View (cartoon, helix red, strand yellow):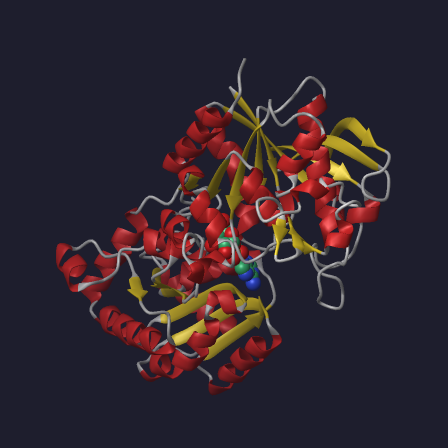
Length: 476
Ligand SMILES: Nc1ncnc2c1ncn2[C@@H]1O[C@H](COP(=O)(O)OP(=O)(O)O[C@H]2O[C@H](CO)[C@@H](O)[C@H](O)[C@H]2O)[C@@H](O)[C@H]1O
């Protein structure tokens, strides 16, 4: 049995802003059959504290970056948790990352340093007879764990794995905070946690963890290149022997078209027509002969939805429609609101988990035109629900979709469409192709069946994580 402490800033279903939460929430159950006992360490945001069945306080800290903290052992939603209850860091209303002004909380470096410090203490001291063999760090918010393990004398006995869900966020802080963040000033170098004159929590993790993973094999290769490395590709090349891409899975119990309570008609794809009619009604869209496309996404430049705004006329002129659920950059929200004026586009701005299920069930196709995508989950939900993914050829989108090329179509194995380069023109061509494929009932039915048969669960990836955790475990 390998004991692993998973350290993250979000975890579904307790607190979620994106795909990170889904993966952190799914891994413990996926790994249990592989002999991994995983506990999840989370910040004590109000939503998390409200959801807990508390077992007790297992550790106290009198000065966790500016205030008192309790470490609470608890369970919630089938997860075994250690929650850092530190009101001065986490008791805030609104977003877990942003203040009301839309900017990062100015003390985000300390807020997530607090999480890392407590994780290192758990490794150094143990809690209630439990001590992790390995700490699994997720993104920059857990990047300081290796440094703090060293500071607390637990580096030698604790294995560390850092998973990169998104290389775009570095967790930067000015060097004036080296002391207050309890970092070793001698490691403020290009080989350490320094990044262009600033502290980078992500870089600290990239140089400090025993092994690095990211969430798809293709993104692991892309990270070695300047176009995708976000200034850290040099480090990634240095560490390429310790880097592995392990494809995300989805929670097949939560995303199950046969039992999904959000869905009007369970039998997929035969039930698609009823689900689509319900979805059209919900979005105020009329009947149409073309495919109903859906998007469920953060509206940021990563996701490439500005390309969709440009390419939309091609979809609509071919009889297609769009239903979009998302929130993010104001100008993009505005552009989609405007597009909705024409009557063939429906837009919901905001975050709505249940609606996202109805969209997978009722859509004919899901569009994911990302400029970069470490893995992507929504195209996998789409596959499971017979909702054909139209994706950019990048990252995990390249690894999870079999493009409807002439060869794949004649072999009868296609599950979706991929376009390259990631431009509005290439997306236009893909949308026109989608409409042609949709018009051919035999081809379309075959693609739906292929999509629904494609494995998208955690089985093989759970084995890969379990092996990796074993590799970094230091046993006497
Ligand atoms: N308005 C809305 N309402 C309801 N649900 C919404 C929503 N907007 C987004 N979601 C949900 O949030 C999740 C987004 O996950 P993704 O993996 O697609 O991207 P994200 O960039 O957040 O994750 C990062 O981490 C994950 C996990 O490793 C990688 O797959 C990904 O490539 C990387 O960018 C999905 O579950 C989606 O359904």
